[in-house]
Image (cartoon, rainbow, N blue to C red; front, side, top):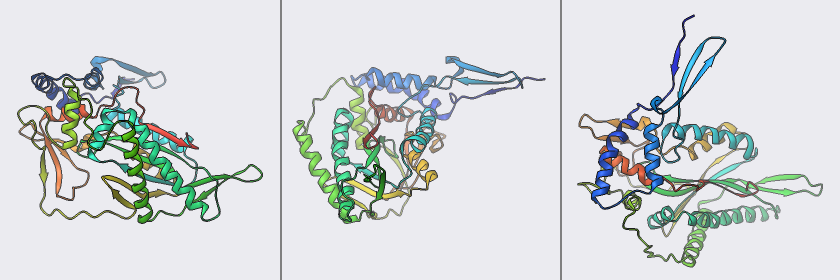
Length: 372
């Protein structure tokens, strides 16, 4: 019987080609700017280039019954932007949440974004993330309990699981929170049995009141931590990632001959005025969205939502290479101003990826309440 060998790897895809080409140029530009990357950022980039390359190690799987072989290259297990490793982690995490964590009750997604300056602050000081999230979940839990108490179901408890995302659709640094909250509370009956009472849908006015409370409470807490509204934190002139993160937040190029210029866009005519959807509100740059909910029987929809929360920063299908060597990052949906794609040089794309790398040993999934 002839032996067939199946090779599974991603080391030769377009993103790997772009990073291999752009990384040396990016590092030269970084050196010319007098900056250096933290070791954990450089390690993430180096490991990504080796991900899926059989030259860097592999497992050889063999079936004795059919004599089938499969070559499985080692992966980088990257946490920032690797589509292959991120995709596997996304599927495993979503299945775990549905099978072992989230009960068969209604679940609502609350998405909290903070002002641009605060996003930079959270990126530079990850210890502040838990404090901001703790304030937000406290306010949301209070609203759920109060809503049920008005209907005679007081004293219950709810819970949440939050994914802290660090990216936007254009690969801009964007620290924000996707909070899955049980859409109601558990209360204990006289016989010790737990009963779940589902809350009513929040109105847009409810969301407006909540985001106002959250913005005031977060700003007060940040001030107590020494971060005022015009906070200028201690900048490190040698930290290359800090420079890249500031540029990424601003949608600009951080290094090279185009340093300080806006990232190039592909814009279609016909931009439209943007209006906030229902159950979405803004207060002093804080935005809260609560329109997405999943019913207690829709486990498939819940897993799909969990996959969305934990998705990798970049899908390889969104990348194209132009004839001039530039890289096009297509948007999933065109922006309200008509922007349909971003255009980067390979080095500019590497800079965007480097800005997204989280510090080591910082968990991006946080539990509160009965799920904590």
